[in-house]
Length: 612
Image (cartoon, rainbow, N blue to C red; front, top):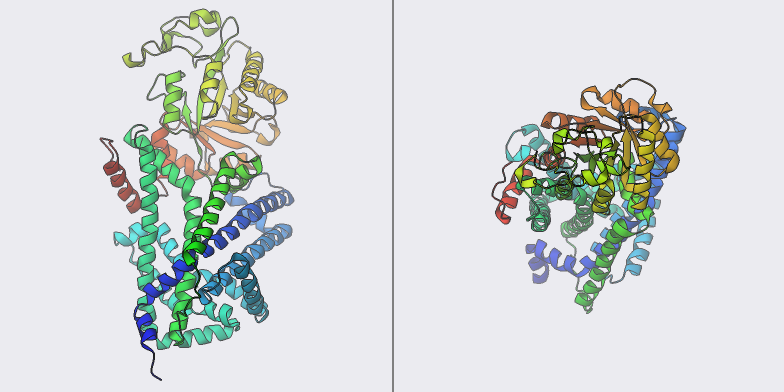
């Protein structure tokens, strides 16, 4: 049978025609996927958190660590919880796949309601024809038939190895998986568009692919190429915006450190956008190729509808949804703000806090306003400060019992009145640039840090007044409305116990001089603060099992900072918060991509030096 010129023309311009049809329904497709992602985030993530806590309780665990996974998974209730969660997640995922194939096959759908109704009908039709084993195969096999998933995996784990030809095994594996992908890519269109069983879909898909294998491989490789360009372009565009925002915020290293952490924070958003956009692309390419191989009319005429108006409508809805979610995560009720951070935190998925020791004490005189401001500009997560009281009871920042080292006055803090301390120069000893820097009071520092950064306040009384000092500090913290963003620590267990009695919402840390003992019995301490030389992965797991966080001091070398991060500490106290951020956040950042971004940052900013 002779094919029409229109059909031949469309088949010769496969990607152009696919893009033309995709463009008309992209807004609707993005809106639908965002709704699904929001449902997963707002419903499944809190549910998974609650199931995790329930499972931990049933397994008699206080804290989840890698070594406890076997114990957790061996509990029947834990297994049932995870199976339930996985089933709900996969049903939503399969429904999303069905919807995208439905939309690819029926581009005339113009409303979210019609898409949902038709997708539900086709989803029900597809699943009722499958056996339980067939459904399981559909769930497990989906990543291997999704070229976008494979591409994301490639970018995450193997970009630098492939570019530098360092690992031929990895490159070979990519090629093999790509070939497998090409032979299974039609299974899902056949299942969801025609309602056939998984067994028949595999056989028919394999038969169709074998007839047109070279052509389909060509289309698949071209699709992979353009998807690669799109992924890399997304990262570079986002990187440019972040760079422009940070360009004049400090030294080159500081900018790059903040850049890495910003990218880390935005990784969830980037992943969401990638999943949404590329799931749509994957479904369209597979569905269109399937129609092409079956010699069917691939691109039916669309009804005369103002697709631009429809597109604007759904793109507007998508932007509103994204803005709402982002706003809720920043300024909304605590439930929304904590949904993502707590979920990642309790699964041990977050990087440790970077805590600036005595402020940014390698760049400015310790325990001064200048050091605190520098730490904030450097992007530290928290600032560690030391406090003592003057003779008349005012709480000041000071590490040593004597004022001699930092002010030149040979006297103890407790022997001097506040009016005397206010006149002292705490900056000249560090550098002439800081001449006149005063000794700040805790009240002043709390005002400076409110709404900007969290604090770790170490009680430094050596004259038996730790309890009284703790009471004064708690009172000042409460007056500043910073109870939820302050940790108070001390070598004195009685002092932090008093803190908990006065305000249970204030986090407390016991600075331990030994690593032995039953940490579970220290009920008044939320964290154990230890010297880095005493810490190991096993010891951290033991402390975590007692339900305590672990902070280490003072880590300054790349080896210690990276090592502490790898073995699972919750916070690292360091004199070099900028370098620490680069060591921690840069460790898992793709080497080749990191080098590209270094050059990008250097070329786009007025910074004079920036080297990997």
